[in-house]
Image 1 (cartoon, each protein chain N blue to C red):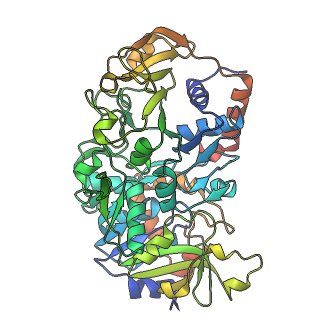
Image 2 (image 1 turned 45 degrees about the vertical axis):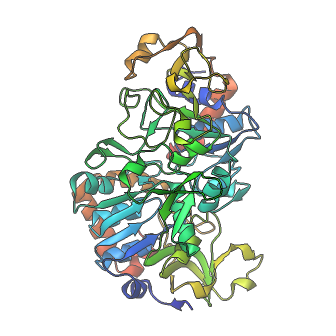
Image 3 (image 1 turned 90 degrees about the vertical axis):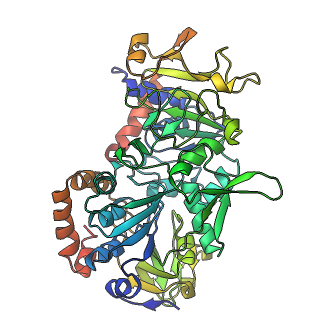
Length: 266
Length: 283
């Protein structure tokens, strides 16, 4: 087996968060690779849903867009886009929303709208798409993104999709009662949303107002300095920092074969 | 009852400057040929409505046909940003464009409300997002039964909806298979609807193995039907041709430079009479 790349660590570690019984609303890009890797390895029964309306889709190749024909051809059923957002997402049928972002902050708030001011942006990004409601209506959110100071910022330029709000706020401030972002998987590390006592979102005593993403595991060969150097806020590390388990040969072979089959879509 | 016309007649008769136009198709069945005919006819000052303004609206915005765009995701899916839309927003080239920005949930609900002849759509959405600060059309209502605050946006009621479908029959009944997106809602919400199709068959009911669920619109809900084979290329039509993913990637390169973009439009849209462009798959 050749050297394992940081991005392969990211995709494999992100895929491991998913379980067989999950109903996962899949964002395009990095989440799509992780979700399909999970389906092709440890979670063969997982239900993958794309916002184009495809339910329980089992693509052989990674789609370039959220609406490639392969997603429909291999789906259990395809519903209209209004039905997808009304019955399935708003209806509370989605256990996991898996999202990426152009910018994110330590509270899991996501920006996919603009870099700079809204009226005269430095970069006009595509916008929210399904994410603003996925972020609030899926029962739990996982995020995956490659670390850089451009992406991991102290203050996002625009809040497209709610994480836990600003310090001092919580999702309840906005009338949102789903868990929100609980875990973040990057090319360097795994982060958990933890409050200052180290409690997780699912803990009844979790203090959302003071919680932030905390590094709980470094990928092999990655140092604390590597993480700090690619993040725009003061990074918190868990007291007992783990080492991310190395991808198994099966995971790596499956991921590489998936990418090879998807050559013109990656 | 739907009338059968050429694409150029349909655009000339039903699309005029200053109107609001919704061209729908969620990755699948995007009405490229019709959008190119709108460009050829020089229609201006359009309010362009579309959940996912991808390459066709990049082209329409790039030639300066739009004064406003109503949307929820303006990207080239899987390939990145829309450079012509960016240039219009960031540099007002070739003209300034007004944006009305929503989420997918909001636009899907707003089309649904339009089709249902309601003035507005009520849904649980927009919680905690800054979109509410930049779009005055995002408001809220309080449920009279539970006191829950819910998001409210105006129904979408376009002057014209344009969609592409696999088949119509001689009575104008329209069949779509595959990803069905929001096309039924867009047509039923609009004052007029143009449907381009891959194929015209005698009678949808007489097709072998036909499934009545795949007829999404009876002919009496459609204004004009145009026979436009490959009218969705370089997007795709399930059962006919696949998505040209290479072109979507190439578009990033073509559209990233103003002169290269204009040369492409000249060569592939303006210089082509309609039929020739269709035969070449709108490339």
